[in-house]
Amino acid sequence: MYRSHYSKDVTKKDYDKSIMVAGWIEDIRNIGSIAFIILRDKKGTLQLTVLKKENPELFEKLTSLSRESVVSIKGICKENEKVRNGYEILPKTFEVLSVAKAPLPLGVVDKVEADFDTRLDNRFIDLRKQRNRAIFTIRNAVFAVAHEYLQSQGFIEVHTPKITASSSEGGTDVFRLKYFEKEAFLAQSPQLYKQSLMATGLDRVYEIAWYFRAEEHNTRRHLNESTAVDLEMAFISDEEEVMNVLENLVHAMWKRASECKNEIRVLGKKIIVPKLPFTRIVYDKVVNKLQERNSSIQWGQDLRTDDERLLGDIMKEHGTEFYFITKYPLESKPFYTMPEGDKYSRGFDLACKGVEIASGSQRIHEVKLLEERMKVCNLSPKDFESYLNAFRYGMPPHGGFGFGIERFLMELLDIKNIRECILFPRDRTRLTP
Ligand code: ATP
Ligand code: MG
Image (cartoon, rainbow, N blue to C red; front, side, top):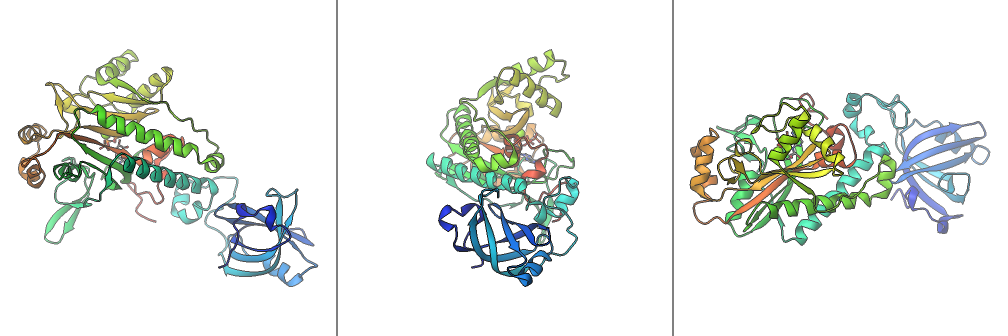
């Protein structure tokens, strides 16, 4: 091993002892007889203090290294109150593990932020910044609790195909690909598969995976490859049961994120855990409220970005940042959404601060009605034969949702651009790295 200690794991017990640390050289301040080197590792930074007269050769070699080179250092750990960590390391021996080329394409500690494209082009360096790495540590934490919560509620994790023969929603936003002699699509969602699983007796399933949408627009909240928690549950009597699982899941994730104290501090954020249950507001009321504020929305239409934002402001005035919009008009929801009467549906969205983070519904489980709804939506039941078959031999009532993780992180951490919330974003123009 090249390292026995991370910067943040050094304790008083290590003082006056020889320890090994390793990481990237963030900065070198050489003032002639003494040099201060900042070494960065996964957990933070530490200071190496090098005295020229003690070992001129080591001094020369260490101080002439390029920034961001990777080194392993063996040295004496000394208490020093003047140093931020309360200690410093006096190097005795070292090994250069990798020399960084100069100049760097992107500075790690520069005061001025590079432009976003340069950052994304050099994401491996961009992620050396504590702030950017913190987002992914939190991302990891919320995934962990999502698994914990859903497993505790009797959901099992499943994995459905990402190469499919029919597009899930019949939308236009699908990536087409050549599948030997046939045409295939990249999955926009696991919708058809997770519903089919409701006919198996698995009853409660979830999937956390990647979905592909060929949306042409370049917005701050759309990616062409994004991550979602998708879930489906059987034997429900209405969509409220699905909303209940969703709000508890979101709450558990938000709460776990609020416990990532270090990362939140690095990001300079404050995370306030929302109260349960989240507010429910029916679509009709949403339209009224928006029209009162001069929106041009007409009944039946889906909310446009401006409307979503305006509604976020209105709800904030009422003291709530999370809210379900329920009882959507049937015509604005996908074909598999359970109707309620002629005009309405059992579809809902969950929004946070004016941005949709999840969509769900009770689904149709009766095959005749499903076929009818497909036709109304200009889809041909013939194209969905294997899906429809799952409804012909005993299908319980069921419902579920799709919940975008990058959207969630964006709202959780008040991040303006969704691309910050995924390691290597895919958007309208970006395919590398
Ligand atoms: P929007 O109207 O905001 O574009 P949508 O209604 O088309 O989203 P759904 O099909 O309902 O999206 O997908 C479920 C969830 O997946 C959304 O609520 C959102 O959190 C996330 N999501 C959908 N499309 C994208 C995308 N292109 N990039 C990132 N997340 C997405
Ligand atoms: Mg939606």
